[in-house]
Image 1: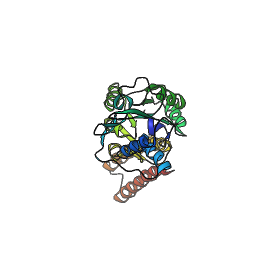
Image 2 (image 1 turned 60 degrees about the horizontal axis):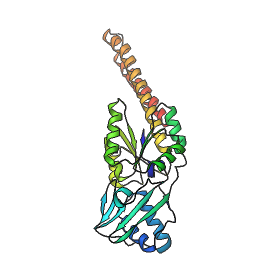
Image 3 (image 1 turned 135 degrees about the vertical axis):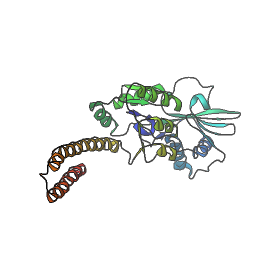
Length: 284
């Protein structure tokens, strides 16, 4: 199972830290952010609306998956794209705003793992699955969430094509990959994986790329879906086994002439009822 970090393993509702930015900086950033459904963009908008009211959307904004948003020479996004003159490694989720002839501004956010993320990861691990985290965020932030959730394989600073490459590498090793993500930049990886899942709060294109859409702010529905899939597979095998045994006994008897038409009709109906009743156990 491969997880994205922000908005998937972590709560989608992030909080903007009190960083060194002005009201005008926040207004511009929030205006750009209206063109995105990314959790960081939504957090920027929420922070502005809390203090200043409705956000005025900026027009002509272009979304660059894996990088950020731009309008003309303005950029809002990751450090290496929007603020190339800034060195260092991000300590947590952040967005940088760059404008012509103005200093770059950093917006830093606080995030926490979803309340049931540790339990779900532990449950999946105990069932024999390998758990990976692939994130575009910095190494420090990724390592912190990986430590909180018990994930031992975590990679940071990945672009969308890097995630696709890693999924292809895992698939090439003979494993079937379930990819779980919510961001626009996760869509290629979701489409590449053997099966994929996305929360209902994800971007439209992300939900379209996913095979499974789960609701709520917890990961429990994902675990429940996998449990149902396992039980369904078991019941299908049981029903196939019963059908094979029934035909192995009934067909030779019918050919030998020991089965009358009435007995054959009753037996066929009875076998169908047994299969249906067994399948209904999936609802328990």
